[in-house]
Length: 334
Image (cartoon, rainbow, N blue to C red; front, side, top):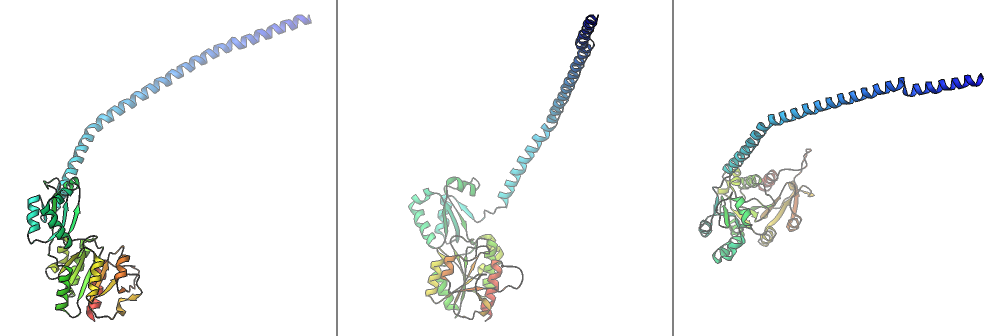
């Protein structure tokens, strides 16, 4: 009886276990699988719908943007072309000459020349080679450039390998400037510019030099602004009443001036000697450097005195043209 009950109990257990594993629970699992399938299908359908909406939005947005994008690109192109045309119109070519015949006639005439651009082929011509060599000795800046660079400078004009820019005023040689200054004043003052490339500063210094009765201004061939229209405009007519000499090498020019009895005085913010304590009255050459770099080290070695302008405020330096005007006032007020 006991064994039978155990057997019966065991069968019931097995059957219950079987039913629990595969009966009611299996139905639930099937339902859960169906639910999972349904959920997966619904999620998939939702994803497909979302992707479809996204694609529609992208297509709509692309269609919506396509016309404005084409419009904006054309507007951008037209704007750039208009700006370039406006820039070329603003750039003043009245003082420019290009073309072999036109340039040759300008070189052989008595016109003042500021700068020349030419290709290497020009030097193969004997007549151009001799003229360019003589002009370079007189201080005219001659720059050898490529054909493409010259086309860029002239905006695609038929330059034939050479172009020049006229100067607003004629220049003298250094020897002529020395003779003129010594015969017209017992203690003349000449201003020399070292590395001043801003035409506004050059024009302002020329204006101050003429206002304080200086006898001349020396401009180096390189690392300096030439006598362009901007310089003449800022100088406000002073170029018509003062002599300008453009030299090939500033340091050699200073040595020549020292041999002719001039004292070379340089302006520097780091100098120990103040300009108010300087008492020399001999013929002077005042060297003015750029505001950021000042006078070059090699030029400082050529100076007999290095002077500073005493500043009382928090500003550490002065504009080059302002410093030149203050120093010329001190030198001429004695």
